[in-house]
Amino acid sequence: MRILAELPHPSFKISLFGMNQKFIIKFEQGSLEQSYKIAEADIIGGVNGVFELIDETFLKTVEDIFQQMRSSFVEAYKRYE
Image 1 (cartoon, rainbow, N blue to C red):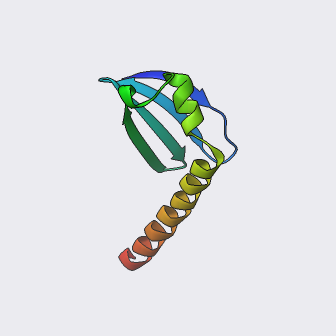
Image 2 (cartoon, rainbow, N blue to C red):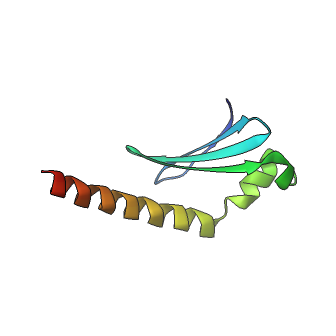
């Protein structure tokens, strides 16, 4: 897996990887991660096409999922204690 790009964002780290004819978009926020894989053949324009895919609506959804993940983990941890 090779890193192709990193995109700045105030709430999380965004990295774009290439592996086995797939793009992997990885979002990291603290100890949480989300990753999305898409075939290179499904994206017009290569890396620039992936940048177009990562629009504000998608980023808002990613942020909402991080909040849900964090809440779920905190609730599970409280039950563990």
